[in-house]
Image 1 (cartoon, rainbow, N blue to C red):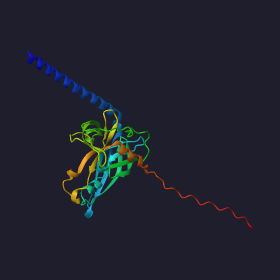
Image 2 (cartoon, rainbow, N blue to C red):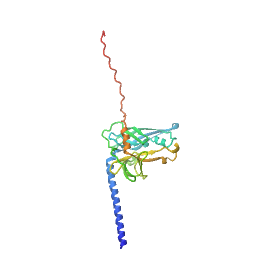
Image 3 (tube, rainbow, N blue to C red):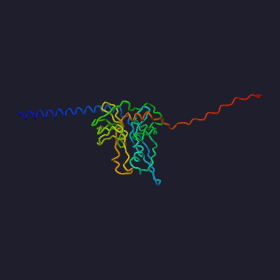
Image 4 (cartoon, rainbow, N blue to C red):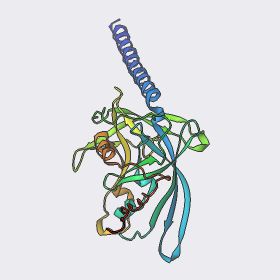
Length: 279
C-alpha cells in the first residue's frame, strides 16, 4: 500500500514538473513572438557585390545577400564586416593571405520590395562591424532597434534572435532561440552562443526575454600562431557583441555622401567697382 502511495506521489511530482516546464516554454515563446512582432522589420537583407583579386591577375566577382540590423530611423544599419568584406578576417588568420576585396553595389532590400542604394560609411576591423547608410534619405523613418535599451546575459540564459531567410525561402522573417554557452570578460565583454543549428546569421540582433537588446552577431578572429595557415577553427568563433559597443560605433558613423552629392561650384569673382573718368 505504501509503495502505491509513493508511486502516486512520484507520478504527480513528475506531471507537475513537466507542466511547469511546458508553462515556462510557452511563456518564453509568447515573449519571443512579441519581440519578433516589434522588431522584425528592423532586420533587412543587404545585397552586395564582392570582387576579390589576387596575385597573377586572378579575380572573381559574386553577389551575396547578408543580414543587417537597422539601428537608427535614418536607415543606419550595422553588418558583420566579415560577411561583406572578409579580407581583414583572413589576414588575421594567415599572413599568407594576399587577396584584395572590393565591396560595391550595396542595396538594402526592404519588405515591400523597395531597394535602397547604400554605402559603407564606417568599418571597425577590431569589432568586425560595418555601418551602411542609404545614399538617399528614406521617404519615412525606418523601423530600428534602439541600442540604448540594452541588457546583459549570464551563462545558460536563452535569447531571441531575428533574421531574414534567403531568396529560396522568400526572404521570410524568422526568429530563433539561442542559449548563452559562455560569457567572456577580457579583453572585452562578449557572449558565446551555443553551437546548435538555427537560422541565426552574422548581423542578426539578439534580444533578452524582457525585450532589451543584448547585441549583434559578428565573427571574432585572432592571429594564428606562427602567422600562417593551419586549423582556422581554433582561431575563429561567432560571438554576440554587446549592444553598447555597437552603439559607440553607430555614434561615430558619418553621413552618406550620396549619389547626388554636388561639388561646390566656385563663386563668381566679385566685380570691381567702376572707375570714374578722371579718378
